[in-house]
Length: 329
Image (cartoon, rainbow, N blue to C red):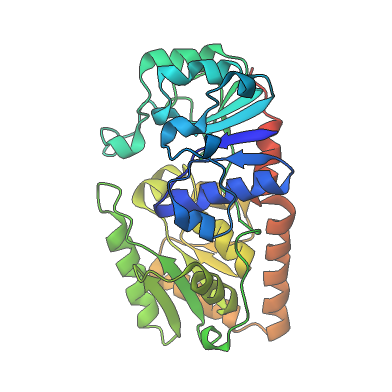
């Protein structure tokens, strides 16, 4: 079946939706996405623009009569769907719309990064169509999504198809590694959190491979995370306080390395209760040192068990299967 899927070119959204593209293809579907980003084609994601046209968001949807005669799926985002796309959605086998909250707690609530851009008439359309299924990465608190019909929580996942690490002795020197950016969500709260944690680790005597805003290649990122002894995860202030969601790094770190130390976030501890967490930088260092004091076999066994859990339950193919089983109530 054809799957018309949104494309992101930057930030974590790129890796998330590439993971979904690969998963749909792996499961025997045919993904159709815009042809405006050749770098994604170079990474091996299939790109099939409609009739070879160069196009933007409109290319996410069937446009010709013959395309309406076959079953197809749409996977898109609430704020980019316009009224001219309604016919395509109505005729789809299933449409999966990723939605943002209608309200969010202070101080983040007024900022556009946290609120759905979909106008009320479009929300009404989504709510009325039985073939439209609404979902989000987060634990969907109904208070935040009060305008939407039932919201399904489908967490992030590991792209085991696109992340293929290689052994590299250069990175085995790192006791713990972190790769990411400062990620200013409009409030610039995460930088201080990161600096407090990094500073504690740098004073600890541990060999830290922390790469922030270094533009490592996709393969370098895979290799650093996979070959270091442990990996570190850090979340934003709203995630810590609300327990709302976890980030892609959670799944990537566990999938590539298996050894993860993280700050405490409710959704992460729900999904992975075996991961040791703390909100105190000194305690995160202590947890890391305790892991490193284990015998090589003991640490390896923990990591392999965690990696297997990801492969068995938390890859994007599992998320596609989860989406396909969604039912509206």
